[in-house]
Length: 206
Length: 105
Image (tube, rainbow over all chains, first blue to last red):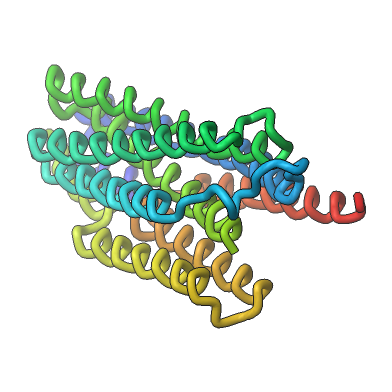
């Protein structure tokens, strides 16, 4: 509706530009659909975890090995990074490229420390004798948490690539769309982590 | 950006600082409450599980509205429709798996 009104106001000179904008909007929707399918991937892994939650096979349990302080720290780190990626979007809407890149750097650093914490948690678990092959529970655990960790890592590489593009090309409809999809992806990862934190860790130590 | 009208609609369609800050604060609160509930249990185990799941879902909804701006899609809300379809599939997979495997004893 608004698109029609806009066209009317600006005459036909901008038709092409509008077509371009529409295209970028369509790509955001396409990315959203990808996120929904990713949701289904995580849903399946959560289902697997829920089913195998108590299959310890005589090995260590989550209650014995989970260390909440580290997990709480990662939770707040990821939550804050989700917020800062939102601030990046606000900076983008104001047209401030430097501020935008700045917030993306903050977001990436928070994401990096999240991954650092996760790696140290995993090495700790392996040292305590909980590997992927220890029991069905630990297989499900490492698959679920590891898949999320891989998503965050991929997001970090993507973020660095977009920062480089922003440096080189500045704010164009294309780079805008890329930052928008990136921040959607980042919020999505935070949402997945909320459920990981609740189902795996909080219920695990109960 | 050359197009002013469009620029404006962009700005309003991605929320304000206020909405991000509110979303952030609510998320923090909804993270701390379950933590407290688990560390010093007020309810029975089942009660606590239900309570912390509700907090998680609430936080998901808050992020959806305050961070991901689900309301502000244009025209037919394809994004909402795909999300609903996705959630139906996820719930079916998770609840169905748990239900079926509950008979596996």
